Length: 260
Ligand SMILES: NC(=O)c1ccc[n+]([C@@H]2O[C@H](COP(=O)([O-])OP(=O)(O)OC[C@H]3O[C@@H](n4cnc5c(N)ncnc54)[C@H](OP(=O)(O)O)[C@@H]3O)[C@@H](O)[C@H]2O)c1
Image (cartoon, rainbow, N blue to C red):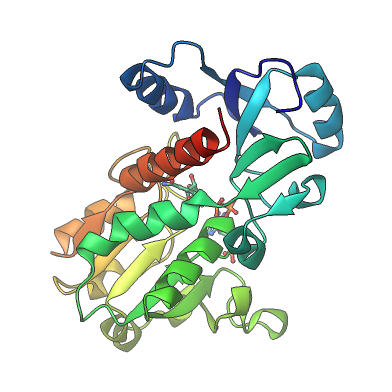
């Protein structure tokens, strides 16, 4: 470690005041008797201030990175893990003597959370949204041999035929046949997240069946409108709470391996 006695971990993003990470990490530290550590939220609207932030906070040993900095922080790092490199996004940073090293534990968290729910029929998936979390989801599902199609508000426009390197369609193209052909649906947009819990992306939920698995990465609320309607159609549903816990546990492992 380059700073004297770093003992603070935290989450860097904007906004971050509603993050559930401090509570998650407080539990983990308590379970392991690590009263020497604390976990804080660091609200940083602009990454131009990142170097100044580091100088002001030599006590910080590791950071989670959240919206909107998961991609733009890459130039500030001395090294990134192969997975993070492939996705072009990080969510966990470790301070080393050479600088900051980036990892992506969303991949780990999503894979471990969805695997127990997958069945042989889940051969093809619709991934709603084309942001950083959708990139992690495509990466995991492809690795599991599941074909993915991106669904975007921009649809199959000239410059968006292959969003995130995948075939891409618009919400208006989600026909009954399309839903019948894709028995896994993963929602990766902020629509429906607290406090705007009435929101829902334009998925024709009436085409969902008991053969479908619908996953929503959102964890507040635990049941979004999309999950509620999917459940009412008889589909299996999974929210983002397990993924959140698992990606945090993986980040904690990475920090401990680095000597925190
Ligand atoms: N459970 C977990 O551990 C976990 C981890 C990561 C993220 N998440 C959750 O996953 C969600 C997405 O995260 P993210 O970082 O990928 O978000 P993001 O980059 O801000 O947005 C993802 C995508 O959502 C689509 N989108 C945005 N606003 C929309 C709107 N009003 N209507 C329809 N589509 C919209 C956009 O795709 P198009 O422009 O192509 O439509 C956008 O690229 C958030 O709710 C986040 O909290 C959960």
